[in-house]
Image (cartoon, rainbow, N blue to C red; front, side, top):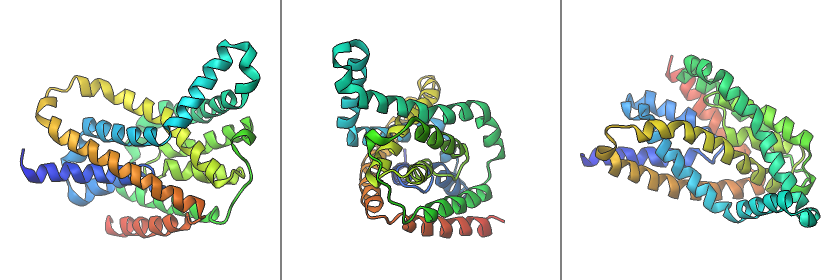
Length: 272
């Protein structure tokens, strides 16, 4: 494979890694780059599965301690009655993640094909402007709810809000962050819950792509570029999340709002 193609796969891995955790829509940016560079590489669903897996691994590493604690507490609560009181908060948190995931799962099953048929790069531009508006609205919000204070009502509201993220250009992380802040979460609490909701959604999306990946006939010929793309996706996702974390804690989400406005307007007027 030519070195230029390896560089392209590396760039795509960087794009995925940068846009996955940030509230600027990874699916929207992939579609924009596809139109800008007129390349069929963006149609490679197997590669998309691989780089998404890279982002998943990076975020899993970041939250590994929280996930291990939650899983242990969940099963301890279920199987050891004498320890239920000690593990109730973590068990409840797991239920809150499940509840917050159900609406977007239903929306994906019912409307994903219809949404994909309506996808266009100009629609992404409009969606980025909507994302910018959401981020601007919550720019000064700072709640007081911690993990233990999240209610089932909060999870349902955030889950319903997350349903709109099946639209390309609507950032999942940005939308969920907005929902959390509107429900008066602390910024750190909002950031954690946002990415706890990421795991089941991401796992479901990857599961749909695994079958095609396994049955692919050209996997041997693209193995090296796939691995390169995944490595860049892992590295960039990790540092992009750290950047997002600092911005959220400082209450500077409006910076992403400005970015989404600039890109959204560019897309709308460029792709007439």
